[in-house]
Length: 152
Image (cartoon, rainbow, N blue to C red):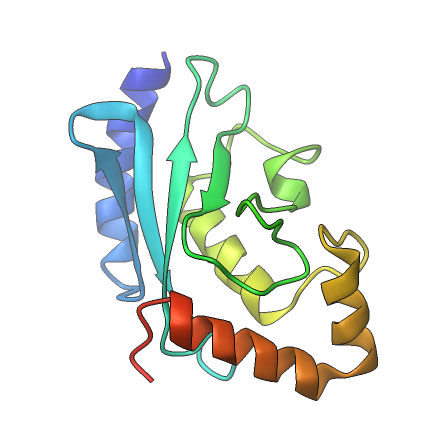
């Protein structure tokens, strides 16, 4: 079931992301359960100009169980652990089988613009964001420039 749905989703991703040039996604070689994706850092954010690569691993239980999604590119963000794991409700407890891959990528981009301070993965970064947003943005921008194939 998962492979058939992922084949359909691949077609949908190509069509949906055609209108969003900052996104891409597709399987690694011919393995439909393991995908790579990329997101361009959103404008008006400290990630602007950076290309952030992600990995998406699906299980044979997809879409009943969410995929595992993580950043391959290092990012300074309160909702992303040091190993790249994304702490987002829609990827864990609030997963819905109807969520598309395109939706997930756009939701991750939205999280880059507006971190979820109710559920930080890294408390130290969340505290910096809350107490000194300018310093947070400076550090996030610096990491983007050094880690995210920045085009700044």
